[in-house]
Image (cartoon, rainbow, N blue to C red; front, top):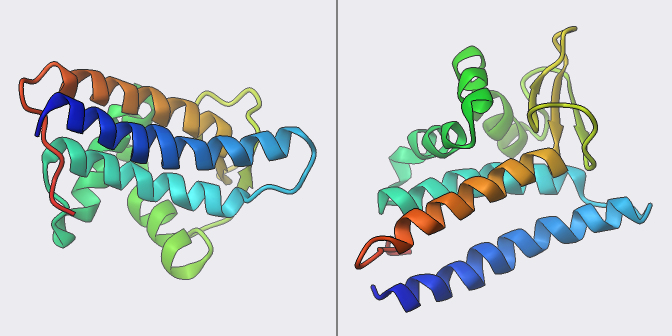
Length: 160
């Protein structure tokens, strides 16, 4: 794949669809209108899995957890440490996708506050997901991946 094709892919799917969908919901929340907090959180968890597939060059079905964990861990040391304490894929991603609820109590907020991570557990053991904070860290990891791949002579996108 040429760099131009890779750039078009990122412009359309990552910077276009993914980023635009989440930013739109954050802006709705900022304006005081109802926003899709659950769908945004679930989407970000799926997108986390998707982005590592781009780096690994594979979307093989049996590798979903390893794809998720690898990209989640690339979002920063705090995320990597959290993933050692909690099976984030199982508790958050699978809980929301398959049971509608996390495996435990959870608060999902659209707008960030003073949390250091977009996902985690409070001191009183309450799970939380903050869409805006998670998105900021996710977007930074996506940009880092994009820049690394653009340094390659022929960046690849896995077959879909």
